[in-house]
Image 1 (cartoon, rainbow, N blue to C red):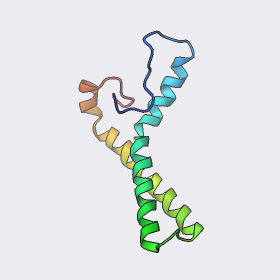
Image 2 (image 1 turned 135 degrees about the horizontal axis):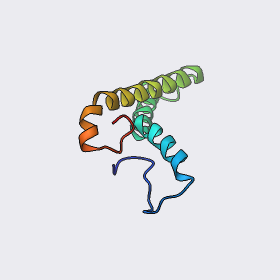
Image 3 (image 1 turned 45 degrees about the horizontal axis):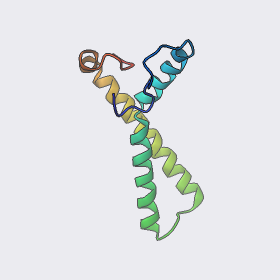
Image 4 (image 1 turned 90 degrees about the horizontal axis):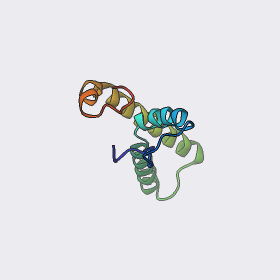
Length: 95
């Protein structure tokens, strides 16, 4: 749980925490840190291979495609690990 984006920091319960907790759990399912890291690495490789910034339309398409692929990988990973997570990490969304 330490590598999750939306972690409840305080020990007390808050009436407003429930809707935000659900939203944070859904966002965390996509592994947002991995999405950002791999998307930035893809952009860096594109810039290096073009010896500068590629055309805007190509850059936007590449970044969007990579982000969507990474989101799907994260969600699929959570889905495949749901049985193990139900035992080891019961706080996960799909457990």
